[in-house]
Amino acid sequence: MSLFTSAPASLPRATTPRAAAPRTRARFHTLTVEDVRPLTDDAVEVTFTVPAALADEYDHLPGQYVALRTTLDGVEVRRSYSLCRAPEHRDDGQDTRLSVAVKRDEGGLFSTWAQTGLHAGFEIDVMSPQGTFTSALDDLDDRHVVGIAAGSGITPLMALAHTVLTRSETSRFTLLYTNRATLDVMFLEDLADLKDRYPTRLVLHHVLSREQRAAPVLSGRIDEEKLRTILGTLIPPSSVDEWFLCGPLALVDLCREVLADVGVERSHIRFELFTTGDEPARAARPVQVRAGEKTVRIEVTLDGVSSTVESPIDAHESVLNAALRVRPDAPFACAGGVCGTCRARVIEGSVTMTENYALEPDELERGFVLTCQSHPTSDRVVVDYDV
Image 1 (tube, rainbow, N blue to C red):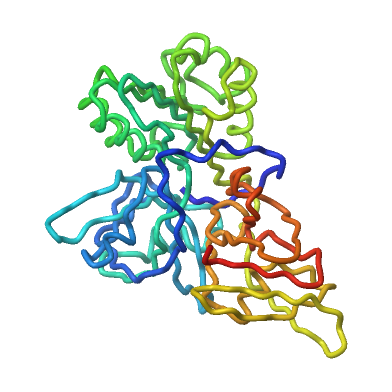
Image 2: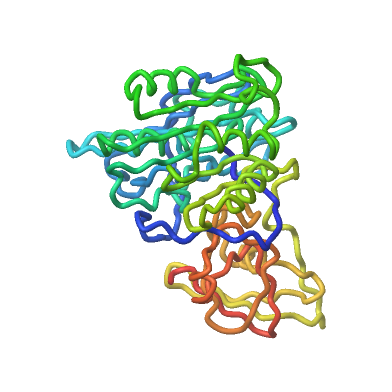
């Protein structure tokens, strides 16, 4: 699942998962592609080999994502994708594996190349896992977790479903998964295998918008009426401990609004957005400082080293964009305010953020910002990526 999106900045986020590992500075390492497996006509699962020496760097929680970086047609390209397999833990010192699913976007440079040019043996830069779209349940016994996904939004839910079901003998997972037709369903066989393994604890509801199903409620596009019917008959909200929503903005917004209306607390709803049809934002647009031009001074601390850059006030550039001129290694992935990779803390000065879909309220209170979305509002801004 690609994590690019655009959405109203006022959308609140769920509270920070108790099970989430502490955030650490994301770093790229070069990994080798072990396998590229077709999922549908326009989607593949890409598996990387993680050397034993890097196992700790790629230890992750179900629902997290990685950023991939490569050069295509002479241009650096970064894309973020959710991890689709549950974390693999080995104590024998052997290599482990990491898998993502890539679905072709119309006109998408990276996703098209992944279908046609990526192959086993290829080396690509993979960032260490990030993200808080993961379970907040410390104890899964007798808990019921529900995932609602559309298209490639199934990717993080595959890892979540597997984890919920394998870590407790009494947990339950229900998946409401919408696609256009059966041929578009990613991980169709994997879901069937999981259902065979946990026949009473895994419930699958496939909704197809362009293919007629036996049950009318599972046919057609999910709108408010259909969703309320599903919640009233198939998935009673009172039976659910935690909700995970992953898909386009329209579906996620609809689900959040309806769930809130039927009494589900926001703290029990987690969401991840992946597309609204907009182009993903880009970092590092060219900016030049002209003699005599009024500027703002931006100081950046990264890996214990402080650097300073002047940013023209009239350029209205982001802190990240300015930082990349003096620190090309400044961390970022989506540059759209979604993934949180560029997170840093404002030590001095002030900024305003255009978008924020990654930081929790408590992080904002402590001064953390997304540097890709932060624009200085003071003459001097000091940010620290190491905090």
